[in-house]
Image 1 (cartoon, one colour):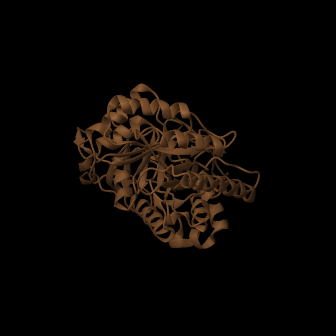
Image 2 (cartoon, one colour; image 1 turned 45 degrees about the vertical axis):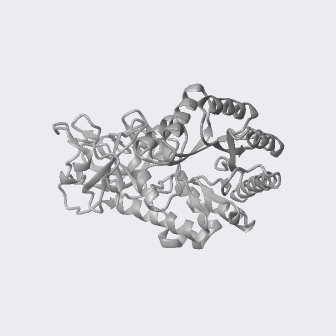
Image 3 (cartoon, one colour; image 1 turned 90 degrees about the vertical axis):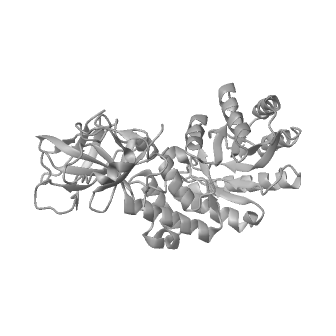
Amino acid sequence: MVNIGSCSVVMLDGATKGIPAETAPFLIGEIGQKGWNLLAEDLPLPLAVLRQDDIAHNSRWMRDFLHASGAQIAPHGKTTMSPDLFNLQIEDGAWGITLATVQQVKVARKYGHRRILLANQLVGRAAIDGIFGELKADPAFEFFCIADSVANVRALARAAAEWHLSRPLRILVELGYPGGRTGCRTIEEALRVAQEIAGSGGRLSLAGVEAFEGLLRGTTASETRELVEAFLARLLDLAAQCDAAGLYGSGRPILSAGGSAYYDIVVDKLQRHALNSRYTLLLRSGCYLTHDSGMYRRAFEQLRTRNPALAAWSGGLRPALEIWAYIQSRAEPSKAIANFGKRDASHDDLPVAIKWFRPGGSMSQPERIPCGHRVIQLNDQHCHLEIAADSPLAVGDMVAFGISHPCLTFDKWRTLYVVDENYTVVSAVCTYF
C-alpha cells in the first residue's frame, strides 16, 4: 500500500496536471475519497499512474533479495523524488536514501529523513554551507558524501573548520574508470584522497569506498559482466588497502556500488570475497520500485540469463508506471496519434504500447494491445503510433504506454496517481524536481 503521509498537506486543484479542470482545491491526502476511476474517464488524459499492487510487489521483491543476500540498500531517491515513496522504501528496511544534489537532500530533510548518502561530490560554497548547516542544527542527521580529489577534500576540511562542527564529515572515496563519470581513475589516486581525509585532523572521516558500475558496457553481455567484475575487483582492492593502512574512521566502513542494472553481480562479487562481514555492503538501486518496460526490463532479462532462480523469485519485478492517453487522430491507415509526448514521458527509449480500453463499450478491463502497434516518434504533446492494418484502435480509445527510464518520467509530473487493479485512484504521490 502506498499511503500518503509526508505530503498530505499538499494542495491540488483543477490547474494540477491530471485533475479535472473544474475541481476545487483539496488536500492530496483526500484524493482517494473522490472515487475517480481512470477507465470511467473521470480524469483528463494524459495521466501518469502507479499501479499499487505492482509497487508493493516490487518493494517486497527487493526486500527479500536483500534479506537473502545480506546487503543493505540506500535507494537512489532521484528516481522518484517522492518523499512518500522514500517512506515506503524506509518502511521496507532501507538503510537510508541516496540523493544526487543538495536540493534533493533538502527535500528529504524537509520530510524527516535522517540518513542520507549524497552520491556526488559536495562542491561550492552554497552547497557546502547548506549541508554543514543541517549537520550543525541536527545532531541526529547522518550524512555521507563522496570525493575523488585531494582539492575537494581540502576545501571540505577548511569549511568544516570554519563551521566548528562537533563531529567529522563522513566521506566515501569514489573509484572510477577511464572514460567514465566522476571517480579516481587509479587506486593510487584514490588512496591519496583517502589519506587526505584520514589526515584532516578529525574534521573529516573516511566512511568507506564507493563506485558506480552502471554505465560500463561491453559489446556483449558476457563482456559487460567481465568489465563490471573487473571494476568491482579494483574496488575491493582499494577497500582492502584503506583497511590495511588504518585509514577508516570509527564505525563499520561502507562498501557501496550497485545501481539498478547490475546489483546482483555486485552482491555476488562482494559476497564471494566475504568483505560484507567487515563492511556494510550498500546497494543504491532506485528504479526497482517502479521497474519499467524498456531499459530496466532489458537489464532484468540479462539478470534472468545470469541468475534464472533469482529472476524467477516471486515472479520477478513488474512494470508499475504507465502513461495513459487517448487516440486523438487516425488520419492515415497505418498511423494513430495519441495525446501525449515528451512533456509527459521519458524518451531515452520510446514508450511501448501495452494495453488499450474502449470507454463505454463492452470491455470490462483493458486488454493487451495486439501485435503490430509501435511508437515511432514523440513530439512535445503527440505520440506517433504505427499500427497494423487491422488495428482495432479508434479515436477516443484509451491506450496505456509503458516507459523506459522511470527517472525521466517522474520529473515531468508533480503528481502521480496511485491506482488499484480496477484503475480507481486510491492515493497520489507528489514529486520535487
